[in-house]
Length: 387
Image (cartoon, rainbow, N blue to C red):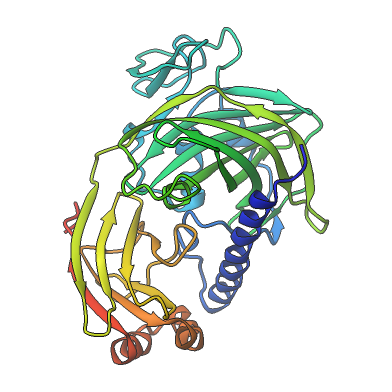
């Protein structure tokens, strides 16, 4: 299969965000003696250094298991409720720890249901959500779904072994994956996605990572806009090709066919909040609502069509929340006090001139400029376990 222009365009868009965040990360690292946990949480991050193998992680990782639980610290998702992670393994297959939630499936239809496993069970046959082609075996291991996105755990194994992969200063590497996604609530052509598999090589032949599928990326298309993603849905995922990024070399394209059976997805309702705002100022800038989960916060802003804005959110301590998704409206919450946030809408061109101040140790100057020149400002209280 040749590369899809639509998918490649999405991948290039993702890479624009990768480059921007990489530069931000490097500037931040030079100014601080440590890298703040979650500084690039869930973001698509660019590779700039070698990711060393992790033999301890590899030793502890069974054929099928919770990849999300193992890589969430790498990606800044320390707050994912582990009891809400659903393992994509048919009953009786795989090896589990006591108490893990399991997605039980029929080998023919992919029909699913959540079960609890109390004992360890060794794998007796190939996993349902595992496909091999071109010397690569890709396994969908588990998922966690919020009111904003789907987090999908993926393990990729290479028969010949992975090349020396590029990585950032935290050891995160990425593989860009082209996807064809079919959802139960969406008819017509599948969603053409360019998804970043962000994670780490755990041994020379195994890469474990996480894909974040933002609902906004599947809400629009030829079938129109879906006002609300349903809490329960099914997904059938196909991967026609993916890109590897060896250290110091051009990207490698691997083409094949990795098509997985349909599986059910149910959004977690743990600590999910929607805060309706519904206001604009006289100039037409404002907020529609805020969505909050244990891992991220999404801002739905309102602004005139002829204006380009940047959404900036500060926590209670005045620290700027880092991006979690594909734009400035999707923000990571791990490590921040979001019991009270302040949202600013700022002119895009003007923000490009001041954004470097947000990386400094003294955030007072940055906040003062925001308060003075923002097109809109709103202070919002959020109920949290820590508040």
